[in-house]
Length: 350
Image 1 (cartoon, one colour):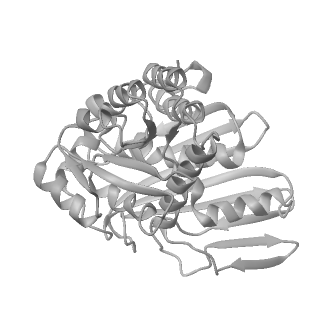
Image 2 (cartoon, one colour):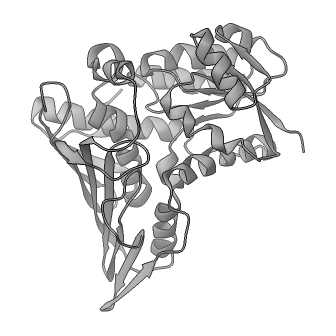
């Protein structure tokens, strides 16, 4: 089967988690690194054993050797890059969030469908092995019918790896680059998890405050799914909290309550609790699932390799542009609800 040849457009901090998918993987080759700074392009190409580097993405799109591009740029650049990559006939894996508004999402979907290229928005959380294990337990009927979801995001002011200041600054520029670091940026993962376990959303109500006038938390987002499942996301920024993490200073935990039992997922990016990554409580008995991959990077590897296989076998990926748009509508509904103080349907986000 033909190896998929890839170019990485954008080489910031997050791409340290993207590269491992190509390491020791004979189904794909990372051929080119593209970023605007020559020194960074050279350094990343050497670090990742890529044969080419460039500072001009047009060079990538014109290269007949490249089958697929990974777009890992600031949010406001997603839309134009996807349209150009689709026109160039490249398969596209796009970093979340999908777009700055729903119009951009619709145009990206239309462009990729018209070009006949595979288009996937990166949502690594739903490929995180403990989340997949929880879904297996739900599908097997271990907790009966899902009734409610509780998703926690706690961000600390210390711990985790180094992130350059300019990376934080553009995320805080809401008008130019998105809707805030907690709800719009990182929150994309949480909204996708809500859809993953709870199904399509009917109504959303949210309260979003500000930390230091910049960070969109503390916040509470509550919703009701069309199937009756209810859920909530709470986001908190704790400036003096040191989060145990190899990556970002983020603590995520999930509780899924069913008619018969409960599932807890105790970790993801960070690890505050010294517990099994997945815990099932059913019929008065607690079962711990400890022996599985639970490093956050495992979710990135699984997500990207899933897309490579979709290209090779002509299958639809997860998340498709349409699925990613639904996540975006969920997110924008929460933001509008907080601004207007009312329940909002994701269908209003057009």
